[in-house]
Structure formats: structure tokens, C-alpha cells
Image (cartoon, rainbow, N blue to C red):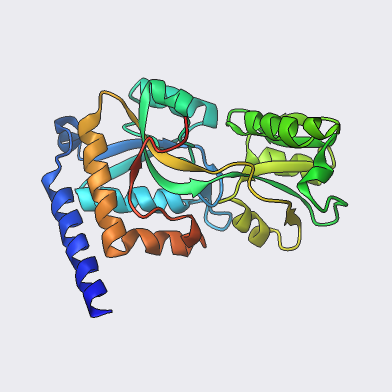
Length: 274
């Protein structure tokens, strides 16, 4: 145990030294602030606290801790999910940390530093007759239109419904996770798909309302998204995140939101499958 503690301590020192050696781009240092935008409808990653209306969530806490360690403030703004990538490309945001999944198609113009495991997950209302994921064949399943989840549903349906001679799942689009859950509660869809990291919060917020069905459709990563020509910022954020993992700051934030099981051992660059 003592040897493990010494090794962990050494790793923390190395990570901190790396973070201190990396440099923020001059424009950010001169401004003294990062400009970040989020889609605040994806609890517990980023959302408005119902009691205070304050912007909060795992991504918010993670970004605030990164900024604190880098010695800068954050100027936050909010935008629809579909506008997150355009905000990065037009430099209205320095980077994106807003429940965005690392996907090969997105890496044509950007790089990801992956910091959280994720996966699309079926869920239903508690009283639904569906017992297994196969029971959703031929049913209406909703998810956010601007994510990769519609394609994930189609792929799963072909492999598990149509290949078995069952009717395909009927995909129903939604604007965001709140809209999708409302469609479910209104009976407009039979089931829904969200990232596995969001469901514990939804189940806690509306106790006894939802039930998870089956395993995640696939496994992937959420990442901090950077412009490809912004390597300096990517490197300093990666080094700082490494230091947070080594000294326990990262774990504390994930544990706060009950997502310790979704942790990564180290930041991963462009790690999602092609």
C-alpha cells in the first residue's frame, strides 16, 4: 500500500509539473478569460439548477476547476446543441465542453480530449410493458435529433430487430433531452434514448418515473472539443486535466454527480472508434 501511495504521489507531481510547463495562448492570457458556450439542457452535465437558476453540472464544475488552475476566468454563454460546433469553428468559443461525444465525423475539423465514458441507453416509463430491449422492436423511440443517437438506434434496430424478422424501431426526433422525456411522459413515444451518464440524474429528479431497458447500444467517450489549429490550448488543457486526475480533483467532481464509474484513467485524444 505504501509503495502504491508513493507511485500515485509521483504521478501527481509529474502531472502537475506538465500542467505548469504548458502555456496558454497569448490571446487568452491577455484577456484573462476563456469564452465557453454550453447547451444547458443535458443534466447532470450542464443545466440550470431548478432552485437557483444557476448554470451548474459536471462539465461546468470541470471547466471552472480547469480555469482556476490556469489562472483565468470563464465567460459563459448558452446555445442550442446544434450550434455548439459552429460556435467553435467561428471562434465564439475557445473550446467545447458540453456533453459532446467524440465521433470520427467530427474529427475532420476538430480534435477531442476524451474525459468521460458514455453510451446511448434505452429507457421507458416505469409502467411500460417492455422488459427487454427486443420488446422495443416496432415501437416509437425518441432521441435528440442533433446527436449520433438516431444512427445508433437505426444500427441497433437492423442488428437486433430486422435481422430477427421483427419490425424496425420507429425513430422520433426531439430537440433535446428535456423534449424527449416530455414526449415519453405524454405518450407520444414508447421509449427514449439518452446518454447513460444522464439517466441516474433523471431517475433521481423524478423518482420512480423511468426504467432503464437493456445495455447501452454502444460505448464511447465525451470529449473536450478543440479546433485542429489550436494545439497549444489543447495541450495545456490536457496537461491540467491530467493533473486533476492525478491529484483526485477530477474524481471528486465525478463522484459529486454519481458518475465515478464513467471516469477515464487519463485524458485520451481522439479515442472513439472510427
